[in-house]
Image 1 (cartoon, one colour):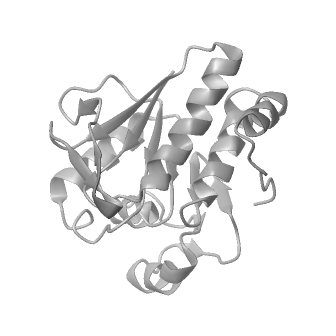
Image 2 (cartoon, one colour):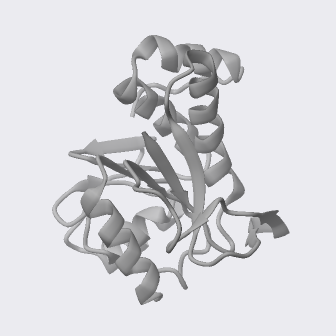
Length: 192
């Protein structure tokens, strides 16, 4: 199973590193066939928030098929204006089994018209903007993550860890998710 995490300049570090840690820890504990990787638009060092440099594993033109797509948040305003990004997300999402967003990654999914009519969430600070910019979405507050069909959206930053542990329960089982949280010494907030 190929799990691709989309990153870009000014992406929140924990938005991609949190899910990457959860999924790679679960893989290590169960020795499953998950292939977890970072994807960027171009082959170059990505400057995440705080100047954190990240080398993606693949680009839009070089990645394997993606079964699970995770779109992270951060300073997303340029991403939603980038037609190449929006088109790529839409195309990959149409073929993926699951599509997730962390924090303001929901804006990118919404811009790709993937969330219309669905119940979603994002970082508390961006709830009003998501509602105003994408009125076809049912945006809810005070939820760590929301699952609606094949889409799962999460609140801000650390909520992506909780959402990813929930994903582990869907891909494997609750025992593996709990073992993963324990291995990470993380207090999993199981309630959405």
